[in-house]
Image (tube, rainbow, N blue to C red; front, side, top):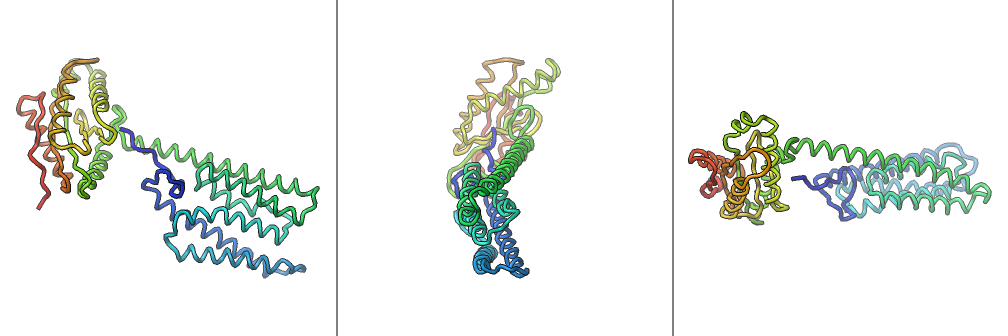
Length: 354
């Protein structure tokens, strides 16, 4: 079963999107990036004020902007876990501060450079809609700043230069980020899934089981595990060839997916051995699931005929015995084989270790 989509490195907490395991590291990275943005901006302005300047009329305004940026950088340094909404608000605030600075200092060159870092951070950390909003804020803010001091015939060329530079840069960053996220998603799928059947591999199934047992430990419902093994799988390969054996594995996986629910997990532990995590199911429900699967295989289908042996174990509410449950299901599976195969055997209740 495919895992839920991940948010990659995007800063999605304030938007109500799926946060996932990367939400906290992403928020930490955003805080540090914004802190660096404001700290470097403040330091640059203070250095600018220390250089010789024949026109000091704008120094008060520049110092005010530098002080605000420095205060924000210090606050982000000291406040280690600010609300995500606050971090999101600092993106447009930075662009607004730059536009105020442009209006006050009236620079004559390199204006696009002032907007590059905010656009880079926005394109990398925010979703497309927020990044597009930041771009329009940049275009509007710079346009307003130009009105007060640039002659009308020169406004358009300066405005276009900023808009073009920031737009091209933003599009490139978004394209690179989304390409990286797509690659990471593919790598995650390859690392967590069996390439032949698409079922989770042993490690990923173990992770899913740990999560389910954690929920049970918190009293949020039990779960059960069904371990199943194709009977005499070597005979299938010897009689029909390995390609037919692969089709048998794929057929079994397809039947498992048809009979599992959205919260259930199918894993291939190795060879012809599979495991199914049945979330919110007790031992009786797991036996019913396994018997239904066994009868479906007995009805026949494409490829060589085969049967399965199944061992079932359940975890009750509040219990915490993931490894013990797997061991119990494995023992039940071997009991099914010893009893003649093509049957389901339920393990005794799994108890929490003393």
